[in-house]
Length: 88
Image (tube, rainbow, N blue to C red):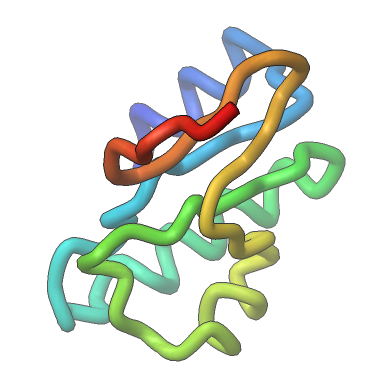
């Protein structure tokens, strides 16, 4: 969590995108630290592209100020947790 804070301070992103498996287990011990970390940067949009191990109820992710998506488009790029078949 501290490394994440340092990286955010250094890079000053407008968006933080997590590509799934944010909490890779049912262990909730990191959630308060993660929430405190993100609360230091309320101006940054935080997005979770949900992965197969993101098992907590969506309400928990919303409490962490995370926007939940199955995929995220940014200009001509599409970000996913798992590879997707592209259909034109």
